[in-house]
Length: 325
Image (cartoon, rainbow, N blue to C red; front, side):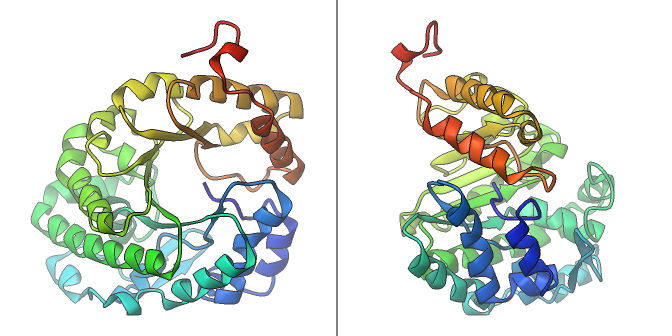
């Protein structure tokens, strides 16, 4: 999940010099913010600092952040979709491609790139940002204009493939596809408008031989569809234990899934909750992570305590009395 952000004083210092979107488009700022958590904590990887909305600017979308994404001109008609460009790969966020070698040169840990999944990007475009819980307007639009929806999702998928391929070519070691709002849809709607496009985006980078991670929030009713995605790793949010999810995702590495709210608790609570997640992760490959993005009210020392708890955990089942296997 997002490692940098407002919980770090060094991030806030950089933010004083730039607007958020300006910071995303400045390779030096991207490099600095990406490296801040790695310098401070004993982490196994760096996550590229950016935003899922960044590549949409090259499609002709006017974006601002206040603080969340605001789309100046929503995309809701066939004519709106027709106006969107499908830019060449080198036109899509070239500042991201420029920052990746800079980060690689400054740290020995692997670097993870990412993009937004087509269905989630479409939700923001149609609703002009995240204006209402559950995107009711977008969900209605999918039923009202399915042909236009598929045309939009088709363009977004192609741009996502090109953007991820650019990041991989520039040097990231793995990529993650964020489908932040997949879970607001029914299984039937997701099977029609979500899963096929996420699968196509992930398949579109399959020849580049980097691990692919897929993450959706509140999507436990979609596990059978996620199991069919061409991704080596499936991220899981905090709502269900990993041991309950693993049978539905055979052969996959699971990523997750500590509730970010835990990081505001006392250090001993953080350590015990981390161990609980790790116990449930036994039984297959597991990448410990938060179950969603880190909150801005988290004290940095709590993150240090979390890292220490994970580092000290003995994952051998024999070390856990009555442990999960």
